[in-house]
Length: 561
Image (cartoon, rainbow, N blue to C red; front, side, top):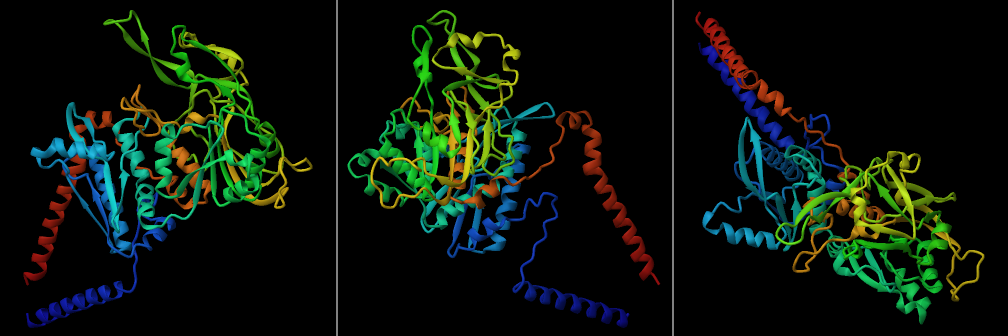
């Protein structure tokens, strides 16, 4: 017995020494294993580089504490595991899960304050074995660093998706959501974005949500081309200080001097994001007594510039069977007025199919009165980011557009070999000046026919960046349609365009990361509910019990002598 006791003490001592040695070594070496097939918990290089710059406490408040329906429990668990991964790499990162409405006496006040900050709660109901459960969920987090805070959306809104599908997609974007928030509060702004004005462009209120989102990571300001008429050289020199120029929905023709300024900005490496309508047509103009209006070409004087760069925007409208819905009043006016939902074929719903970082893993994007883009041959690399569906066709202008067209029966024959028209194109390379071998509108000693490598994105529908207004004329979130309560992927697409043009490719690559969560077939589970319980709960208990009995038997047999 003494020998056995001594051996046990030696074994215990060796275990203690081994654990102490492992802990000491662990202080000098950091190693974690990710055994998931999709490497869900392996942080990207971009995320790691961002959290390396966290030198002071970074606090994360996650509003997902409580007993939720099964699918949101999954979102809660995945969020916690990801944050634990962040914390493991940097101990200055701390997080806590909070139930904001735990105190029932202050629920209304707290909910109102959250909604004022844009942290909108959702009321979810999930069917489980015929029983319906409901819960108020705040799928948000707040990241705070050095007194600077930003909100993190944890749940993506997908068109027509079930709760399980929304959660699955949201888990896929968790790393991007937090990495982008960390980047916002930790890093100082460096790059500058100019919103071009002077040709009756879109009002800031109608693109307020987009501007607000861009402002979180970049300096953004207005640059007016009115000064070009008097001081073209000074205007060009000032514009060159910006890294990106956004031209959104101009409706007045550009002068030759203005085009030379933009051309030289591009040739010298300036990035541009063009949102251009080649046809004059607005949805509001249809809401009149006749329910119709005339759509006609809109000559902005940019055709020769785009032609030189390698594209052409045709003055046609795209009519697409894959369309977004609108609501129209039907029946008699008054108390009996009803609203019916129709698909508006001049508002294509475009799903990205290209495996490009700008459009990968993005939900359907809403267009409105889009124009086809022709790709021309030159030395510039061109990537078609978005195209209309195969069941689409161009409609020449001028043409009368009427709301009564929503009742038309589809004629699939009219779409034969006419669809898949580009509506968003990425151009990359060394652009040649449109004034190459031409007389310059104004003298410029710094004029270059070709210069630095640059990038631009041309979108043939400016309404992609347009947000709606609520009843108090306050901007709603970009991509949200208040009439149908549907979220589209416009915001993600536009921000990816900005990030890509400004070379923030790391964040885009995180967004396009593929994460696959196996989803249970609810119908099969309900059909085999008892057998599933026995297999997943009962069998492990039986195996554990057998192991315990066997272990006790072998131990008793060993020491009985």
